[in-house]
Length: 149
Length: 418
Ligand SMILES: Cc1ncc(COP(=O)(O)O)c(C=O)c1O
Image (cartoon, rainbow over all chains, first blue to last red; front, side, top):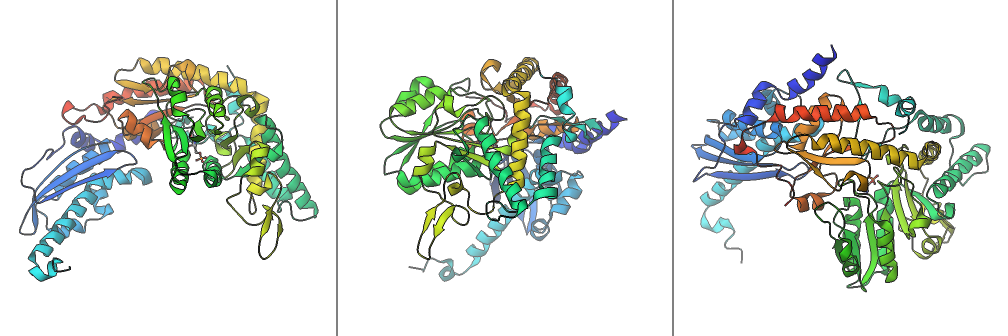
């Protein structure tokens, strides 16, 4: 009885799909000519990801990542790159913690929720930055802040 | 070796199961568990004589004041201080060091130097960084060698004419290194610098005498020595505590107040502004009683045996790197990395076995950076830990590599010391 219980705790957190994504990450690597490139880092535990996206008509055409860190953070990044493929900017930036938990299907607890969210936050920050730059480029010259001085 | 089974009877929490497995608590450097005697003393305080200290003549306040004062006396005698005038209670080690840094920074001048070591906890770095900034002083760091020991040959180059304060940890909370406190203090004294010992990891685990060490100030926390959270100790030599200024002002710490000014209360109350943590002090006193009954030398020897065993077993595990010196030179803790596996994953796998260890940078980010690692997994021991628990730790660690093994392509972490 005791063995099943303790095994459960590990098996749940490191269920097969998570381990598969950790050991064989999807979309792992760098991309040339990415529209979005964002590096994020959790200094507390040292988890790192860099996500890169290629955008087309307001949707994610391609998503890749590199990183290092715990199995949960890296598996989450791998699963996320699959999930956002083909999604609209709006759909991606409005993704929530719950959406991510539904994807990864584990209960990480209050400490490791940061690992689960690292890649999602990186993608969202990257897209917001990209959109802001585009909006800025689209503005007439005089509004770009160049006329300030 | 201590009769740990007997001792464990005193700790209600150690009967707990985690995921159906007996709790193996190996996170004692973070905080220790509390024996019934401590919990009971605090309950008694609240149930029978709770009241504010030092201010009222009613019966309850007299009893509370007596117990509160006695707690200071007990702590003073525990570390061989002269008496309660040399022991002020704070919130924790961190607050004690902040009070010192805040107060001593007023005596610092431009280009004065504060010497720390590369293995300090954030709580013995950040307050001094701020003190240095305020005064225009500089920080210097005693370096560590490949074994995680201080390079003593550099002692007298680092501590020099400009050094005004030398603050260092007695025992490292990551490397486990027991630093040669007497030698460091002697070097500081030669040039007239003040010495501050961060004893958060030494006073709970080994006999420590401020008289023998000859340090000027010392800081430690009750919660790391079987006592409650929310009480810390600031020790200082009487003549120095008399001289330096308090940094927290208000009730209790004054002797006389006018609309314009105030005179400070006598020691140690000058450093205890406001209503203190009275139940906490009572709990700390009970913890000191408990430790004294067991004997600090016995605690130290017990941990030595556990540490030696842990290091022997862990060294057998493939792909496991241990940080810090050999067993004979360290306190009761072992920090390590299973190469290629993040410390979160190591901790989680141990957790599923009921084993509580800590992963991360342990509030020593500069040290982690120096070692070139994001963090470590740390097992830290105390008087209630047993040889069987060390075996459980090692057995569980043997499973980690098998479970987490991943292809070389993404195994970028875990490259140990440069
Ligand atoms: C060496 C050392 N110094 C200082 C501290 C800080 O102690 P506290 O958090 O009780 O203030 C710790 C505890 O983590 C420690 O290990």
